[in-house]
Length: 239
Image (cartoon, rainbow, N blue to C red; front, side):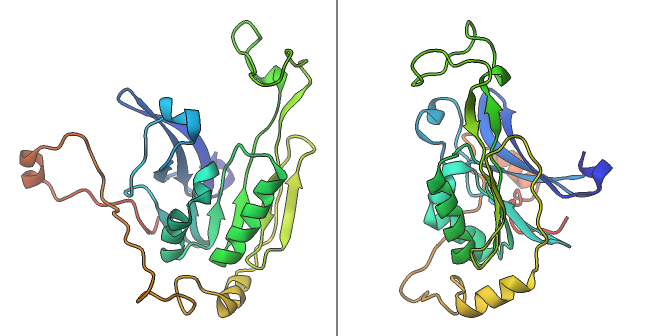
């Protein structure tokens, strides 16, 4: 799809490695090449009994002709230190796929855009009960009686926000849609002039962040380490 339509594609997936599932984001370039992934660092609530935990080796920011692109997933966007790691890599197009359709999510996205001096693109699903398996196979908890097939169970709320906090497109709650906006990258410069959280508005002698960006594996073999160079972390990279 990315190669066919000549676009950078950022998409959420459930990834399987061995017998463990991860909530992940995949990145592709306009030639259809896979660039890398981000694994959700901290699954939320009951997600922790289903998904594994990511580590610091998959917090990438990709330097592309459009700008520096990265992503965090749903509620891990509320983690200030994780956001700061992306700011430290110079993120300019901050993608935030989510399942949170509440109005308060929009406030979080606006804050991140202004805090990071970046464009925020948050995508959320719009779906109805009929998009899921039938009641005998799938039940919606907390809704009381079984909803009708046309009942909206997630109303969306996809949005694009500028570094100044201006909403450029959305939030869309009207149904499945494609939202677009022209991004003036000069807005990033203007925003950073006022507030650069990892630059002139930082106080590293008082507050600083150290990120362990090495992969953490449950089993490693010394013979393999002797034969091959250490695995390179998935950090800021050019496609």
